Length: 492
Image (cartoon, rainbow, N blue to C red; front, top):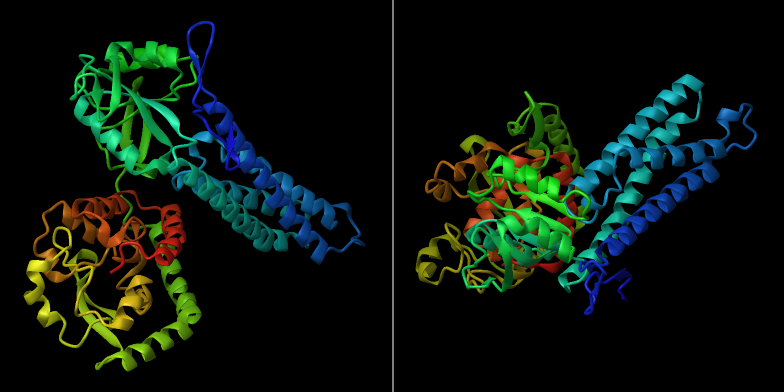
């Protein structure tokens, strides 16, 4: 049954096969989405390559390797081959997370290196155009197309379609947490449809948070083969010894199920996790967070260049905002406030003034009306906020002057939220890890609900960024910030 361009993986009637197993057409929609991505990448690559070849083409080139048509075809073939070899079309990474764009970027970089080496070997005079113009243009178009496809997929997942059926196996507490998270974040693509526990019982008898408990942990493989679940999510439980996990993996061989084991370090993920075999024993190696080195140097350059570009781009809007602030209420256009940055060093943050003069002194009188979570002070209808200030806050225009903080090096484009000194005075050792990196103009907090988030969730997102930072994650956050700003969710 087709809905919205993709196939609903869970139609009302499920066909039961002769052997008793349930035939779920989930693989069909996954493969259909994968084919759509491949076609999108192919068309985008061909469009860019052909366009550059046509625009800059020199059809009277003397040697065959200098003919633009061959260069265009060769570039397209090279890029598509790099995407295939780089596993950029694996269904497990399509439609979610930064890993999809990370693999796409690595594949394009590999294609660039091969193209450069080929140009040197063939002594082609035109190769620079393909390296510095064609490949970046292909990257921009393919990433944009994939993002649009991802938006369509996520919309359908919010409607309960295009989800992978999950069998969760573990303790009731950890499985309950997994069920809560999958319901809260449907864009991940999981729907827990069955649960197995140690004794075959849940917190509510035969159910756990509304999901049926279908058996014991020893029955997982049998239920997967019988009911066709696509994911087996193993959560922590004393039952899961290394031997039992290995036997479960063996018993799932030949099925369509993907086995996912939740590690003890729940908030560490991405590029820091590595599986190594030491003396025949598989070990999960967790590398140290990256706070220095080449990638951090690249981030510094991107911050400064990005701040200059954005200041030039938003200069007219910033001048208009400053003028409106001055006209709307008495006081200056800018507001300066002390914040805490990297390693606990204080700096002065710059914002457009959105409140009446003397608003900070009136905060004590509003303490009993605080709606903020944890250490944050927030009011949805703050009487101190001016009319223009409310509009500037809703669309985050008041934060644009912070680009000067990025330019001077006290902030980054992406990072944790810059806290107030009085907040930091209340931090425990774990929360103080937010100060290991520069605070950001935007971050995971910004794109996940901002002031609507509970305090614990905001802290968790900031710590996750500190632990799992990468250039690909920064790119995804910057991209999603535009949508978050336009929607204005949690901004007040």
